[in-house]
Length: 90
Image (cartoon, rainbow, N blue to C red; front, side, top):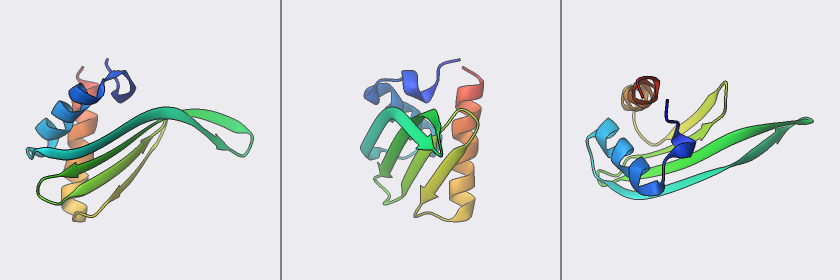
């Protein structure tokens, strides 16, 4: 299974365009660490801005994910669901 952290930025752009069906205008993609209390966790950060004005920010950890968006709850739910479906089938 290929994860978001294993994609180069061009591959990630294609994934986000396929998921939302809209051209990606801007994409930020980074891997790193997050410290919570005294525990250190691997994480992936992705900020996606689409041509339709929608923006979605993902902080992805091994067991959880934070999502921030300027879209409706329904659109955000679909994007997250499609992202999880994409990576669970790879």
